[in-house]
Length: 221
Image 1: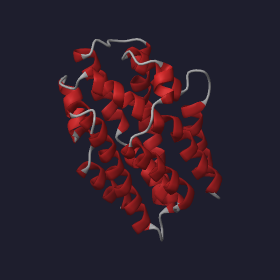
Image 2 (image 1 turned 135 degrees about the horizontal axis):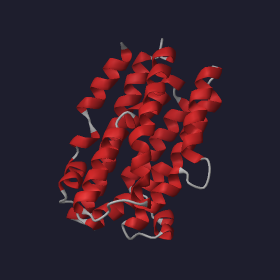
Image 3 (image 1 turned 30 degrees about the vertical axis):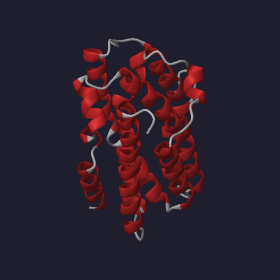
Image 4 (image 1 turned 45 degrees about the vertical axis):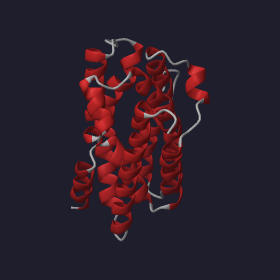
């Protein structure tokens, strides 16, 4: 099955294997690096609903649109939306909302956001959803690891600063399951593009983490 090939690509570029996350999990990542990560990640989190919206508007299948709309609703509705939850995490790290919202994007962050924007707007819908899946499939495990690290090493033991990760630890299980079905349903004739989109997304995420990881070594780099 195509989804099994996609899962093998994800396993080969697992975010939890990246040094940035292994240091987070082990408590050796400086708080300043977490703070910069919070600034840069907000660029993706605040853009993510627009990727879903772009795919939703391009799909001619009502059942797929309904699934994407449910994901979009989870992301963006209400005062406690996911961008808001991320701002609360940043505040828990001592970074103000204004600092997060006004932060300049580094090159890797720009490439990550623009790459997702292009695949959501221009690639076959199955390929765009595969790029989402490459990320959301990993989120529950990553979120659980982050929560553990924050509690054990960074003094964040509960409350609003953990809500973003607590929500994603369970919600993206459902989202990624739906995305897997969509990819399988829509990928016929687009298999190569689906695999390419998956690989490109995984590479973009590793470059993003490379960039925020370098901040701790040489902030001027």
